[in-house]
Image 1 (tube, helix red, strand yellow):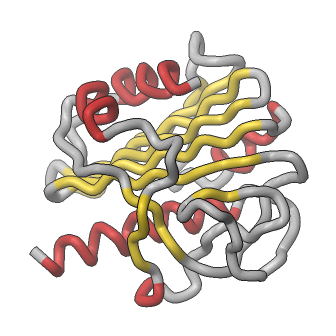
Image 2 (cartoon, rainbow, N blue to C red):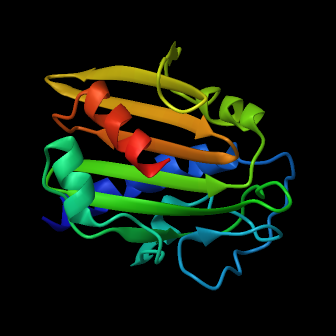
Length: 191
C-alpha cells in the first residue's frame, strides 16, 4: 500500500511538474511562497519535478473541486484532493492565478489544474507537453485539446485542456476507466 501511494504521488508530481513547467516563459527557480499549499500565483514559482523524493502531499488548495464531484463525473472513486509541494519551476504569466488538485485513488490518479487570467494562446503551453499528439475537441470552451495514451495491459493516460475566455482547465486521468467524453464533460463543468 505504501509503495502504491508513493508511486501515485511520484507519477502525480511528474505530471504536475511537467505541466506546470510549461506554464510560463520565465525560468525562475525561487521556492514557492504561495499562501495556500498547491496554489500558484504570479511572482511565485510553480512546483516542478527536480527530485521526486523531495515532493510530498499537502493540504489541497481551497478552490479544488470535491472528490465526490470528480468521482461522479469520471465514474471512479478518488480520495479527497491533495496539493503537491515541491520547489523551483517556471512562473505563471503576470496577473494569472492557478491551483493544482491531485485526486489519488486505488491504482489511479486524477490531476486537475485551474488557471485564471491567461491568454487564449496559453493552451499551447499545455498541449505542447502532451505525451502524444493532441486531437482538437469541438464544443468545449473556446478551444480544447485532448490526448489518449495507452500504457498497455489495460492501463492508459488521458487528458483534456480547455480554455474559455481567460480561464484554463487541464485534467489528466491516469489508469482510470473514464472516457475522454467524461473528462471533457468535467472540464466543461469547471470552466
